[in-house]
Every structure is written in C-alpha cells, then in structure tokens.
Amino acid sequence: MGLNTYLDFEQGFNDTVMQTLLDKPLVHLSGGDTYRFLHGLYSRNQQQKLKSYAASGHLLVGVSAGAMLLTANIETAVLCGDSNTVGLENLKALGLADLLFVPHVVNSQSRDQSHGLSQKQRAKQLAKRHGLPVYLCSDEDALAIIDGYLHCFGAPELILPEAIA
Image (tube, rainbow, N blue to C red):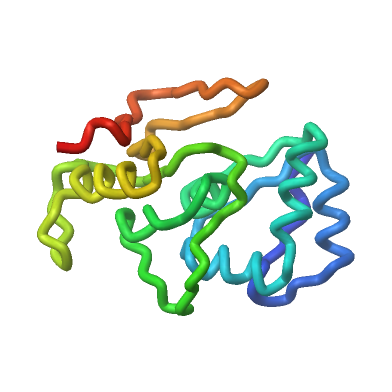
C-alpha cells in the first residue's frame, strides 16, 4: 500500500479526493503550520469525518502539526514556534488523544523570548490549565495509541498537571 493520495485542507480541497482518502486504511496528517491546518479542517468541516474514520478502526498517523491535531487542543503549537496568523479562536482539535503534544523539542529548558519562560515552564502552565498531560517530544520520539493504550517510543518528557510548582 502506498500513500498515494494527497489532500490539502487549505488549497485545492476536493470532496472526491477526501472520500478517496477515507477509503484508505491509513491517513497521514502531515506537519506544517498547526493553526492553518486546523483552520483548514474547520473551514472544510472535515473534523467529524476524521473522527469517524478513526472510530471505525482506521489508522490516523500525525507528524508535528498533524500529531497536535489528534490531541485535545493545539494550544501547545506556540511552544514549537507556530503563531496564530489566521486568528483561529477555537483551538479544540480532534480529541482522539486525551493529552497535549509538543513536537520538535530540542531542549525544553530553552527560553521563549516573548514570554521569558522555558518551554517546560509553559508546558506546565498548559498542563495545569487543561488538566491534561503534556508530552514534549524530540524528533527522535513518538507516541502511539494502540488498542486504547498509550505507547511511548524514545524518551518523550511527560509533564503532568499535578506537577505544577
């Protein structure tokens, strides 16, 4: 099986191609700008189709922004450098994983110049605000939910909501 069907939720969207995509056993949600990706998904009203696709036993694989779309919300996107240039107000994602995700983590102690807090400190704030664990993953790490169980590959850093100081 090849990943031979490509669909962009922003430009050139086509309902026929979307149906072809949903007929595949696996859908790969790529990286990119998380806010624009979610905005495209909402503006095309495709979120329920992807949730139903996953609920029917098909595989959704997300990388970077695509992985954040599988979580409860994309508020962590700022921690990997995305900015909300589309003015998206509803940051609720697909909610297929009851967690928050931060990709491309190099050093979670590095400072965010606009907030003066480390990536880890900001992740702790988000964990507390949403009552959800936050996983900080380098490009060498991965998370997979298989049969309802979360599996970690590599060494992702877990921030629990209770771990707020």
